[in-house]
Image 1 (cartoon, rainbow, N blue to C red):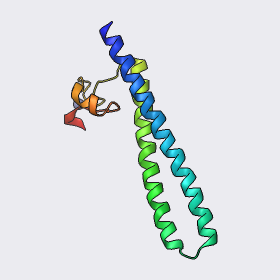
Image 2 (tube, rainbow, N blue to C red; image 1 turned 120 degrees about the vertical axis):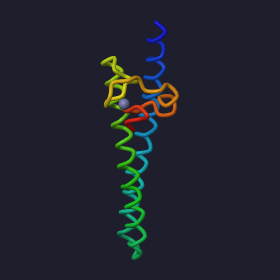
Image 3 (spheres, helix red, strand yellow; image 1 turned 90 degrees about the horizontal axis):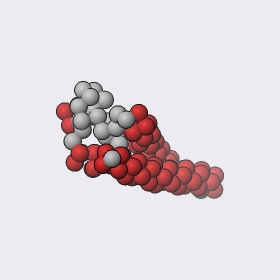
Image 4 (cartoon, protein in one colour; image 1 turned 45 degrees about the horizontal axis):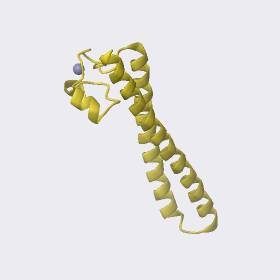
Length: 109
Ligand SMILES: [Zn+2]
């Protein structure tokens, strides 16, 4: 029963983080649309391109994090959450608390 409570709490945390990341991704996609509009009107496209590059890099980082969270949620469903994907050993709870979507133990991170 206690184990069940933990996974419910983790699921809530992962879902909250997923919503947060999805919102940031939406914001980035909106701001890169703005940058495109800016590009049409102003000559200084070098700076716009640089900003777009940063946004794309950030967006792809966020997409990776979202994928990790989706995976962690799937592993919760399977009952494998909190185990290292490499060795199958339990991941240190302190590590999971810091990074709820962690897929590997410290040794295999
Ligand atoms: Zn491991």
